[in-house]
Length: 274
Image (cartoon, rainbow, N blue to C red):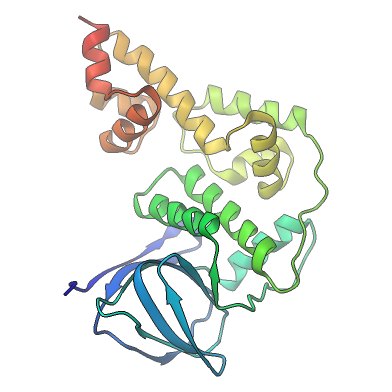
């Protein structure tokens, strides 16, 4: 039998967003409500819950939506329980996302289907949740969260709001690229970049992806790694290099360096200096 496991935390960067990563086997949630939304992905097993006068089963691979103020329960629908990652975004966070997406004030989104099967979005929610759990950069956490919420709203909010018309923003995006290159070691926020681009945060993300081929946080990481290679090449240690280029710690640095360069930074440095 699986052992129960619970990790619960808040992200101060995202208005104290609450997050949960848990495995429950025998645990049963009493009927309860949340002030904000519940957006979860089932990683293993299956969950069953009562919601809006019906019983629902969320199998592995599914996404669960609970709207604010709605009474619901929760218990295992499989012998070994269920493992899930859950975001609890506030009403304000969703309202900000939908207004940013459409370019005008909107009512709060309502998700009519409590269980959906969408492998692409399931993977994206999981990646966002992991980035928040691993304390990725402020820029990455903010960017992933806004992008994920906006895409969920477009696909599953009952009124299917559409993004405002797309327009190429060459000058604004070039200013952002220059800023990221000149300030690669700084802990930059998405709002800072939006001000520099003179665009809304979501429109900045969409335009940057369209014109550069990468989201801003990935561009920031690649810029950091490029400078890190130069520093390792002149004999700086991995620890000092990680700090110099702006990573939170050596483990973050090593993970991203190997993902981009293909070898750990220590090995790269030793070969360059042999």
